[in-house]
Length: 226
Image 1 (cartoon, rainbow, N blue to C red):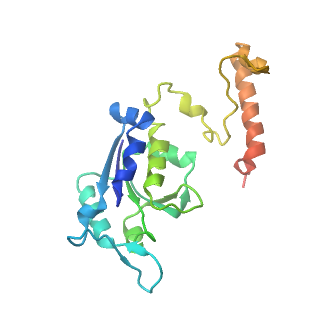
Image 2: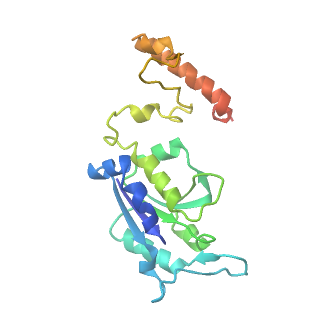
Image 3: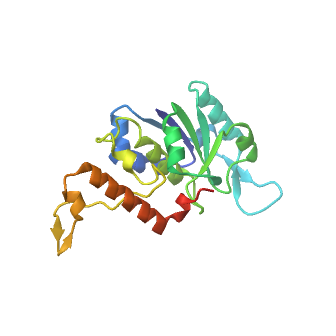
């Protein structure tokens, strides 16, 4: 998979994408991530990519010319399955969206800044708008890093244990069950006997029951049929 990211501050993406599982995915050749500084397509020698809002109001808006130039130049060599704009008013990211996007070949992400991007770019170039939560960040870079991580970790071959991602929270619309490791007893606190039983069927049943219980307690909205 290839992911291109357009950003005013691409440096903000360096650390999240250069360590841990994302680094492993890139080192294995399973994921390519290319960041592009929007100022490369600035409208003048001063690096301008934003301007005042028409109609007045506080805050600057990212101009259409630099973004359109960047999108068109990148699209000339790569065919993108989705052009994604990270924005607070987009569709809220969930595991299902991450799963769907992980099946794509090429993605282009746009990181917003200031008051956002000119609406005409959204209307004519953006194919999907995604939010990572009901709050506002200083820019879309952190949101893009979250989205890349959510997608990249479930690409086949990225995780050492191929089945690990299948049991993450939200994969089956349930929260993950409690997990335990050695020692079996610590300060008098014992691991549930069923996990020590060696009976895979009983363990699976216990985990499902615990997932259901935890979801009912913490995220009952996930169980709503509506």
